[in-house]
Each structure stands twice: as C-alpha cells, then as structure tokens.
Image 1 (tube, rainbow, N blue to C red):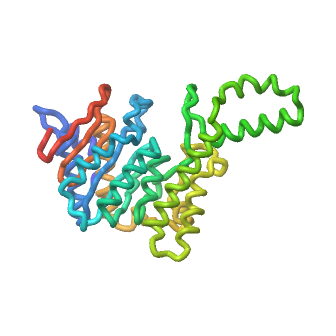
Image 2 (tube, rainbow, N blue to C red):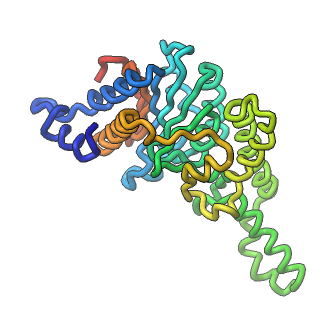
Image 3 (cartoon, rainbow, N blue to C red):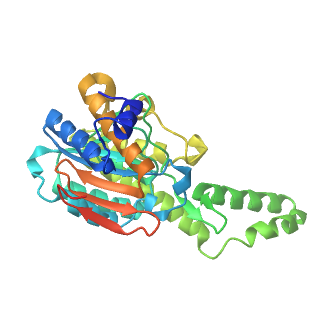
Length: 318
C-alpha cells in the first residue's frame, strides 16, 4: 500500500491527478475507505477532523459537538446493522455530553462496534472510543485523559487544577491569614458554583466511561463493574497524567483490561487503514474541509472553513 508520500505524488502527478480538474481528493479517499470495507466485510465509517493543522486551530468545528449527530445519521443510512461497524476515529475531543449523544445513537444502531485509532482520539473522543467492543491501535496510536477542561476566559483550565488551586489557597490562608491579600486576585475569578461545576463535570466523565465499559467492553465479565470503574478513574485522573494532551498508548490501555487489537497484526489491514488516514490528511491539507464524516458507500457529511457550513454528499457527488 502507498505511503503518505506515495499518495501525495499520486495526487500531484499520478493516479489521482487530472490535468483538467486537479487532485481527486474525494476519489482517492473513498477508494481506500471502500477498500477497507471490502477487506473486512464490515460497515466502515470515518470521523476525522483537521485538528493537527495549526492554520485551522481554534476552529470550534474541529471539536465533537451535538451537530455531529446529523453527520452520523447521514452516514449510518442504508448500512446493514448486522454487519458490524468499524469507526475510524481521529479527533481532539470536544463536548462530553455531545460525545455521549453520539455514543448512544451509535450503540442503538450497532451491537458490534470496533473503533480504529490511526493516530489520536483524545479527550471526549477517548470517551467515544471506550464505548466500543474493541479498540484497534498501532504502536504510534494514542488515547488521552478525559478530565474536563473549563473555559475561564483566558483559555481552557483543567477542572482538577481549579479545585487544587482553591484548596491550596484555603490551606495557606488558614495557616497564615496574611497571605489572603496575595490570593485575592485569583479567588476573585472563582464565580459562585464553580467548584461544584468542577466536581460535576469530573464525575460526569467518569460515570459515562464507566457505563460504556461495563455495558460493552466488559460485557459478561463478572468483574466488569470493578474493571470499568478502575479504568474510568485512570483516564479521569489529571494528577496522574499531568497534561490533558498527554497521549496514552495501547500498552497502558490494554493493561486496564480493555480489549485492544494491535493494528500491525494484519499487514493488509494496517496498510489499508493507514491509506485511509493518509487520504484524510491530504484532503485536509489541500481543501477547506475541517471535519469529514463518511462511509464506505461514499455518503459524506463535511464541515468547511471558514464559514463552517455542513455539506452532504451522496455517492458519486462532488
């Protein structure tokens, strides 16, 4: 199978290049998604965003949102529910409540779900991954912590860091009230209910992931509830991971009892998955697409920069 560089060459002067119309990004991407379906016999759906491109950073459409339910509705249409689902997931995460809506809809449609992580499924996308029956990861693939991040006006701040900062202020001021004046500027940023919000969002992530794991990954395991709770606590522990963007590799994921299949086990499967991923990378680099939700039939739902308008495409469309 072609590498990232091979595909780039085919787009600029080879198989997927037309002198009249230029690179056939859609044709190349759909070809490899369909090829993966032909190899596995399973329904194949891609959910990917251009979050690694610094030029598109900060675009809210890169994140998981409730509007993505429309995308899943579009690409799940006409897929046989008894053929299983392979979901190729590449995302920085987003709203955990929106991810929960996507998970609930996906699991209502498919009882057999395999999530394939070609590179990174972080934060709320990790939560989505943990709602699968099995996760496929390469040596280079990563999930991420699920501790919530709150927008405090100057960027996203971990809920756990806010709590620890407040507790530190409490302790220091209790020991030496003279330190209160130094803490006032920080404490003034804490609005009523903030600490309760931190607790609620932290508990939400753990509860949802625990429910997913118990219901699907550890289904039928007599120790499923305990395993699910331990794994959920691991992913939600911001003091353990120390950075929300820190990757969690497949060995650590598998050590929690989570079913992880190595991407490298089947060479043809690995090559085709990576060809799909490289095709997505080139599509993002050479187009205005910021988010692509697509199935092996060629049915697509896209978001485009800068106006972020969704575009639905049926097989054979542009």
